[in-house]
Amino acid sequence: MKSIREIYKIGKGPSSSHTMGPVKAAKIYLENHPEAKEFVVTLYGSLAATGKGHLTDKAIYDVLIERGPVTILWEPKTFLPEHPNAVSFSYKTEDGLLKEEWTFYSIGGGDIKCDKVPFVESENIYPLSKMTDLMKWCQENGQSYWEYVDKYEDPSIWDYLEEVWDAMCKSIENGLENEGVLPGGLKVQRRAGNHYVSALGYKNAMRSRGLVFSYSLAVSEENAAGGTIVTAPTCGSCGVLPGVLYHMKTRYNFSD
Image 1 (cartoon, rainbow, N blue to C red):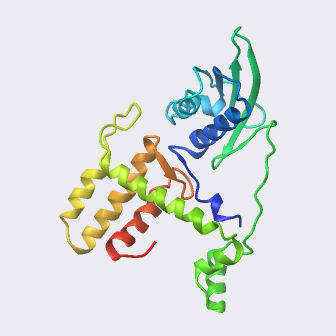
Image 2 (image 1 turned 180 degrees about the vertical axis):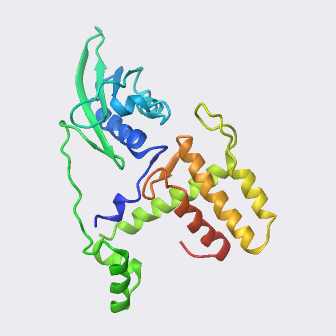
Image 3 (image 1 turned 135 degrees about the horizontal axis):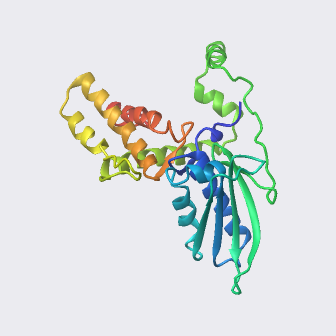
């Protein structure tokens, strides 16, 4: 099993492959082309076909617009051979010529590939990959899950997980605070804040259920709106774990 850094990634929703990956690609292109002042981006295949619904264009635009104007082209029927999720970046010179076209492939989980950038496959660091085996190991060695993590991860994992937890808490708090209609043609109203207020009026188990639901929904709505969330382990499932942990902390005073 790989590092749990591969499970928890902080980024923009609503899709690790359609927003987090393209955002990462846009940032890499910017870093490698400091001279670029105007951009032309082409989305291919799946990124183009479902890009509007996944806010792919907005995610890329928000990264590049700080440097200069952005033109986004859509090619939903063109599938590049490497992967169905493809995006190319070029920049326009003062005389209108396009230069330095780099093509990236968003391969899932926020990871990308590009022939201009070395791709380093993360290594397996945990010897066990099944929960039953891990439970048996902890019982036989008299240790907890966190001690198993500490045994195989480098020490910086705790600072990283602190950042992850902070991002999870902020996504809940933002989701409860924000109101209005979520992006997209369905005109779905945000409801997490209303559910939270309703839950406060319940007692005992019903209150706990209502609060956990409102916290989880708050993160899911932030994800749908293109907000910052933590994959757990995907954007689509980003709400459940933060909702449960946040309730354990605020209701039962669990430490971070």
